[in-house]
Length: 177
Image 1 (spheres, rainbow, N blue to C red):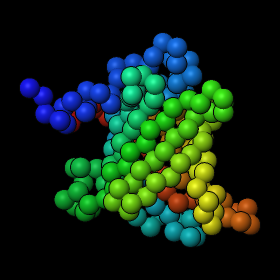
Image 2: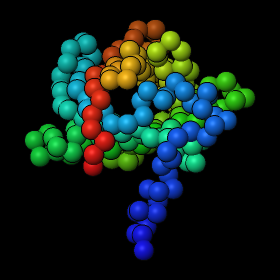
Image 3: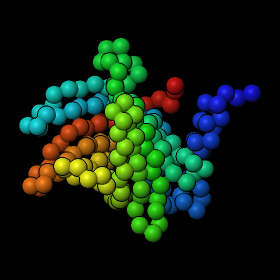
Image 4: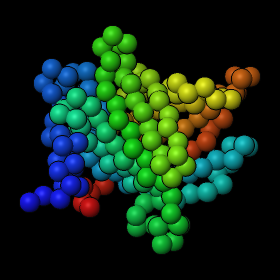
């Protein structure tokens, strides 16, 4: 008999996208799997004020209709040194009528929910937050390849100034627990 956690894990994760959605979900295909991260946070002057290692795990999800990911920072390995951080969950799916991806990120430690609309093109995926804040938040994947990518979190102020908040440099990790 499977535990509730085993049943849930078997239902949320999928081995592949649904055939009719494979083309639409293709921008996320290179991200499927596990990634080791070098994580940096930036101060208001654009200087790095903190770093750690993290991890990010992507999977096809919800009967192949979506892509889900969990990022952990600091990584589980770094918790004893860097302390407890955030475990974030995103679920993304393609909205044909919108011609873009809908994505929602959940950060339970800070009780934070952030919906995005995402567009993909030429090795990049650009997510723009829908939640009204003092600044426009963007999360951008760049330099996506089979063995690495870059990600950044930036805000655009009301004056149009872009402020870098966080970066991840990802390299393909092991798919182990």
